[in-house]
Image (tube, rainbow, N blue to C red; front, top):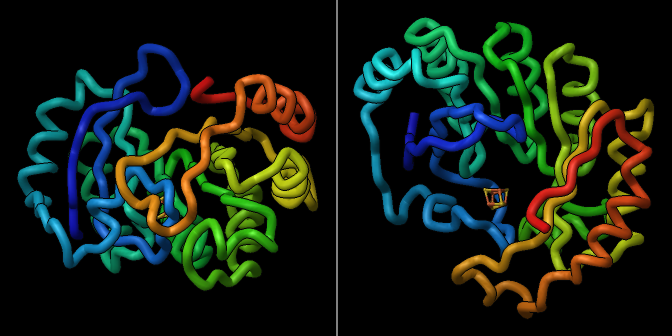
Length: 234
Ligand code: SF4
């Protein structure tokens, strides 16, 4: 397991919840607004934390933590992710949240089957026709749809989330939400205000974040499509 970083953070939007966040290095995409750009190319800036040390740390801190978050990069690219998550469960018994871009529905199914994951947060970046532009890579959209279906049917708690970056319009966000909720209302969705990243702007021309008013108006237009909808970053 290539662990590129560790920090404490909130588990999801529940006040008072504290988790240890583990950053898995490497990503198959190259979103221009990625805030973890330093770790998406595992050959660059390689910082390796020992799995054994991390597990000992987790065991020692388990009384002060509410959960563990595995983020990235894209964690499902790690060939031994299930084994690693099993070790975390054995070391501290804490719930595990997984952040994913949804490119590997089979990996998600396996983690769900083995009861290794307690919360899945999947980014849905854009409507189908804008996906590759936003993520800077070839995308198998059928696999993205399949991941959404796997997550919705899993019985595991989940959230889909979309960053309202400047290249998306209100109509794009509505289309994205319709895609997420096709074949059944999704339980939870977060619309995230765009925050310009440091660097990476060479991929698309930088633009200012949408106004608060537009983000709020867009959120109001999609919130009823979900069981729970949250707005982040305004
Ligand atoms: S999918 Fe996530 S980790 Fe990968 S490049 Fe995009 S924002 Fe960064």
